[in-house]
Image (cartoon, rainbow over all chains, first blue to last red; front, side, top):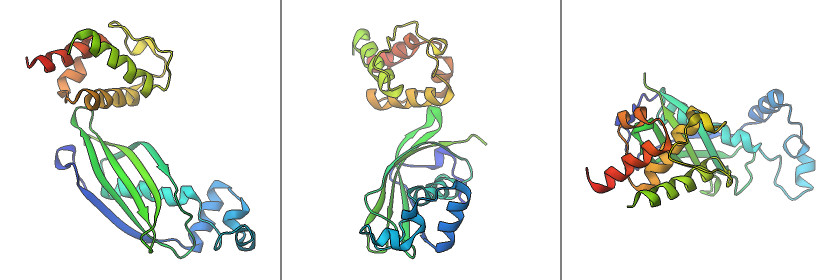
Length: 139
Length: 82
């Protein structure tokens, strides 16, 4: 886990990691959110509506922004203040996602950074884009 | 930049940050006048002012601000180079 303080960060700084979307992730997300929408739970339902298979929950994809902030950028001192994202393409079971954040603004006076975020699949297609404002806690 | 123009831009920033075009911001406006003005919104206001005016506040400047007029005064001084 990174432990960046506000003065350690710089505009253009990038952190990234990979994760594979598994069937167990679908199940766990459904279990604790109680989102039983068939688009996420029923393979045939999703295929009959033009998708390749069950579509991953958008918020499951977005949940990796928590890891990006809390483990990588800035890491331990992180507290997410806002997230603004869109989902240009669906994510499926077995997709390998590259989660990347780049610091675009630093406000030292209020210990806040803005991070441009993007998640791409194994075909280099963007499946999430947006920005996140993250506080960098003082100690 | 004239003080009046700074206040006008600050007013626009408040409307955008609070997503409320009906807000009327004066020199005396403070956190007690706007229900949603909490610590997180204060961070967003300061960050938006820094971006809009292309300046950076010092930590002490932020902690000493009591009302909108205080922020406008600091911005005006930064533009004047004093």
